[in-house]
Every structure is written in structure tokens, then in C-alpha cells.
Amino acid sequence: MTPAEILSTDLAEAAQALRARDEPFAFATIVRTAGSTAAKPGAKALLSADGTILQGWLGGGCTRGAVKRAAQQALRDGTPQLVSVAPEDLLAEKGVSVGDEVDGTRFARNGCPSRGTVDIFIEPCLPLPQLAVIGASPVAQALSSLAPEFHWLISASLTDAKPLQPLYVVVATQGQGDHEALKAALARPTRYVGFVGSRKKYAALAEKLAAGGTDSTAIEGVHAPAGLDLGAVTPEEIALSILAQLVQVRRAAAKQTGA
Image (cartoon, rainbow, N blue to C red):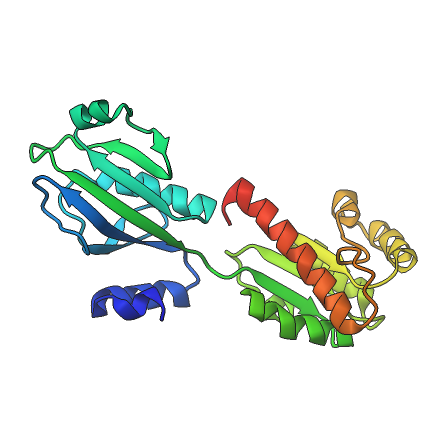
């Protein structure tokens, strides 16, 4: 069951619309309150990429700033956030300051007259990373079948790639238009370009790409041969080694950018 399936109709429809547009968003749920608070546990809201509440309600303005910052952090890091909004004197009693994080909870100040405490859990919903698998070789077919199981959005050409999402490319053309495919891939902003073929073959292609004006840094950045050195032999094993490398690159990028 997805989060949208347990939300109100308005929240569910808004979430599905954002997902259809491949836009990042976040769910916020009040999980605990203490003292006088406008919203109660179970209250939910849908937040845009900049932390704006699009649907739902989390109470008055007392929590808005903290929720916005936590949502932005969740979407940058790709990890859920738990924020506790409490009066400053109560934070002092606990021995924490505004902005401190203790045992996974980040503390924020509630400056409203109600002086209640609100704990809010924020869950990021990021678009699937897109992987363009170029070619019809056995390795390309195996990778296209395997990658969706690990939450990759697969396309068979660069023209199908969505412009606002990080793009990963594997060229597995097996001699059928290698140069053209690599040239097109290196002309676009990408997180990863991998070439299925030998180092010797790619060296010859690299010379041709350089002679045609392709940026030398982009040429040097191609993973050739694509994949981690697992001793892979079969197309399925090679696809697995490439997917392992893609995950490695993706997670390293997420630590730096959250995408």
C-alpha cells in the first residue's frame, strides 16, 4: 500500500499528480503532541519541493518554518526527518538548543502563545532515477529487465529522458552505432555514462569522439567497460555488475545532492 492510498482523497490526488509530473514532494504527519496544540496526532499534509504546504493541515504558523526546513532537508538527503517543535523553555529543560539533533530528532522553537509541543514525521518522495539503456544487445535486454526491480525508470533512447531528472546512460549497442550513441550521451548532462565493450574498443572510440570535438573531460569520465569487476561472463552477470555500479554512483551522488 502506498502513502497515497491511506490519505484523504484530496491529498491522494495531489500526490498522484506530483508523481505523474515526476516532481519531488514530501508527506508530513503529526505523530505526537503535548500541551495545547491546534492540530492533533494523525494530521497530515503534502509538501512541495520548497516545503510549501500544498494540501492538508498541520496547525497554525507555529510549526510552518520548522516543517519547511525539515522537508527541504528530507528531499536533499533522501531520508525521513523527525522534528520536534517545542517552547524554548522546554527545550532548555531537556538540555537542547534550537537546531540540535538528538537520537534522530531535530528540535525547533515554538514561539506561539499556545506553547504546545508538536512532533512531526516527514517522509520524502523522490522521482525514480532514469536510466537510458541504448542498444538491443543481450546485455541491454538483461539490464532493462533487471533495473526496474531496483527502482530505476528505464527508457530505450535519450529522447525519452525527462529533462528535470538526473540521467544515467548505458551504451550497449554492441558495435551498432557505438560512436553516435556515445556522442549523443556525452552531449547531455548525465550522472553516469557506461560503455559495454572492451577498453581497447573504447580507446578507439574516444579518439574519434575527441577528433569530433567532444569534451575531453566527458570522454575520460565514461565507465568503460561499464560495471564493477565481478568477473561477470554472461549477459545477465554483466548486467548485474553494471547495476551494482549504477547503485554505487547513485548513492554517492545522493550523499552530495540528495537526488
